[in-house]
Length: 51
Image 1: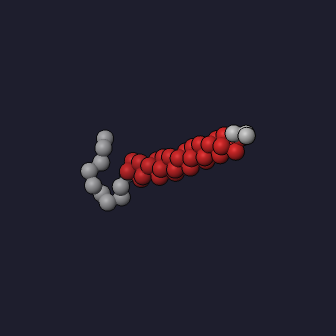
Image 2 (image 1 turned 45 degrees about the horizontal axis):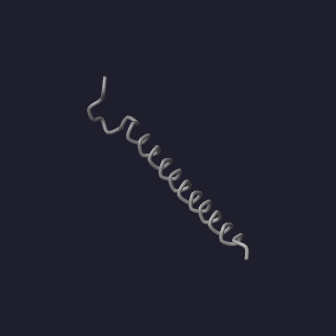
Image 3 (image 1 turned 45 degrees about the vertical axis):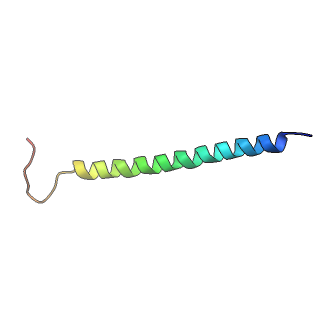
């Protein structure tokens, strides 16, 4: 009896989950950077400006 199918499945699930979580983190980081850039842009409404 071999344990190879269990081992391959366990490694596959681990790698798959790591890829999914890493991709989600990368997407959230990209979205957060875009929001930060939008906040750092000077507004055109004529509000108070920083020196």
